[in-house]
Amino acid sequence: MKCWSSYPPDWEHYLQTERGTQRGLSLKSVQVEAALVGRSSLQADTTGGECPSECDCPPTFPIAMYCDGRGLTAMPTIPSRIKYLYLQNNAITSVSDSALVNATNLVWLMMHHNQLTHDAISEKAFVKLERLERFYLQHNNLTSIPPNLPRTLRDLRINHNSIEKVTPSDLEGMDNLTILHLHDNAITDLGASLKSLTSLTLLDISNNKLTKVPEALPEHLHQLYLDSNSIASLSEGFLGSLAQLQYLRMAHNQLTDKGIPSNTFNVTGLVELDLSFNKLERIPPISTTLQHLYLQANQIKEFTLGSFCSIVDVTNFSKLETLRLDGNEISRQDIPSDSSLCLRLASSIDI
Image 1 (cartoon, rainbow, N blue to C red):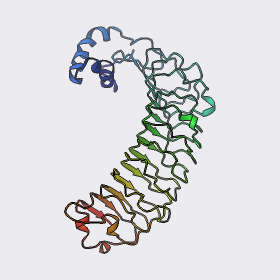
Image 2 (cartoon, helix red, strand yellow; image 1 turned 135 degrees about the horizontal axis):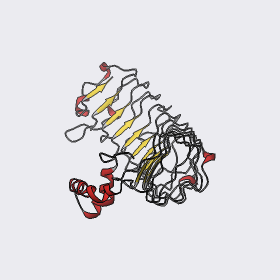
Image 3 (cartoon, rainbow, N blue to C red; image 1 turned 90 degrees about the vertical axis):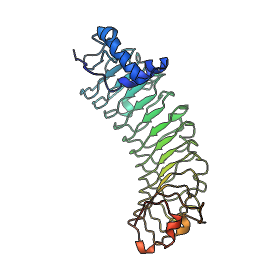
Image 4 (cartoon, rainbow, N blue to C red; image 1 turned 60 degrees about the horizontal axis):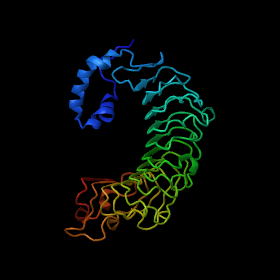
């Protein structure tokens, strides 16, 4: 029997979510209480409850099951009490309809870094997981999003697979989803598959094979990562419906001046804009509220101060703090002498 001399990594989360917040206790006071209780009731159960021999179920954290990095090729038996299941870094190849039938209380399911394929995941493998909030499936061999994923998900990570297409039915009904990682796949088109994700705040679809920005992006996005695709142009009013967007990264694409409608990025709210490693020849107009702008490794030939400030006075100036223009076709001598009035907050300008 493994001896648990200290709390497992998720013990503080357990205290806060399962007991502490329910009783309005501070983390410190709950830890003290847990230490006292642990000497009696928690440690009295030396097994932590039923547990497969190939996994660990710490008695101090009885609702978690640690099966990560055990060389597993098949799913273990999962007791119904388990809420946090760690199966990452194994060689699991399939999930049958019955594999998770008892795991109806799962909140977290970690299955990243395995060998799962689409055909080896049964149609109803995940239908019983009606409380699941966090599901990690990155670094597998999936060619599509598994069917019938729980609509309760808040955080879905399915990056570093071989997914080529996402359909509306794959994500339909996921009203609670706030984080979606689809980067490092082979996606060519997302269609209208993201339209129903009304709570989504972070979308990472970088390093795919997109040639255009997905249509009908969720309006509550805070972070949008489109790096390393093959996007050459943007639609008119691309950011008009994304009033809450703060971070936009489009580095390593094929953007040209002609492909960007005027004032596309001149919107309030943006904090960071990354357009590095594209084919721009001019600095696009930006909002005076933008704080970080990355334009390195383009083909920019002129430092146009008007891109940052249309009017300069005591109250009108750029809030830009970071400006990178290195790897372009301009030098420091091309910076206008009066740029310090407009860019008065920029700590440095890299050219």
